Length: 190
Image (cartoon, rainbow, N blue to C red; front, side, top):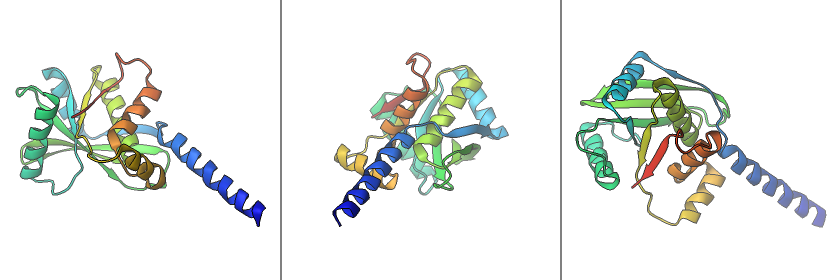
């Protein structure tokens, strides 16, 4: 009985360590942009800094985007004249640890949205930001809202369920992938 308990605990510990290690690896093999997404990026790059507001897609209506843009501009001091794109990730198959990330551009009530399909939210965001940098030659800036609550609780939720505070995990994936802060996509949390 003692051996069985030790064996069980070891399996759980190894599983948790493995999950933590995998969660901060860039696992996307390719990022595919459709024509509209590509156009949004090229136009944004021509205007100056590429600014993307990370958004959890809820209603996907004018009100949602207006509120989110106002909050992020205020919290992160995004200049009022600078164009922003919204960046939204939908998890298609969480069991697929590697694979392609698909980015679809769409205009919703006048707001430009990059809809990303990925196996995980932080990985999809990191892969997309790196691909934007590589395609445009410009360092993209991504803006996240601050999640209220105990950070240890969110860390535990992320390790156990794969959910939690997205910004720090996205940043860590980027940091491990590109060690140079001058070229690494910037993450802002406000």
